[in-house]
Length: 145
Image 1 (spheres, rainbow, N blue to C red):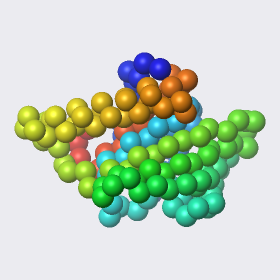
Image 2: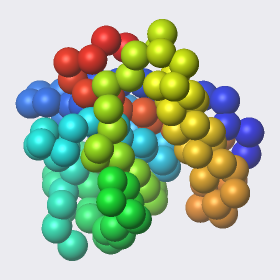
Image 3: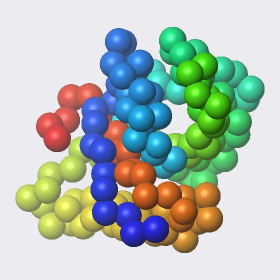
């Protein structure tokens, strides 16, 4: 997999949650990198075996792993009433992510390192390596994109 595409969006709030998951499904994206504040309501189911249904789309919570102080890995299985297909999806939530000032070389490097990490994960992990789908990058709702 040669990851070269990203979908960048703000943290979904309210009615935009439905559109967010439809974009993930339509793009066949199996990796979401979430940089939004941990105080925001999650737009994903957050209990094992919990399912969030959005019209014809079902987001099934499969697993959660704490990977250090500020990184949590969530795994979901997305299914649809319209198609006989399931999409395994991983969400990496960096819950201590700072607001980034891209004019600051140090903070700009942090952002660059994060994109490199997401690309590395996608390229070296068998669950992502056979996909040409974009990585979905979620930022804070009040940050400019």
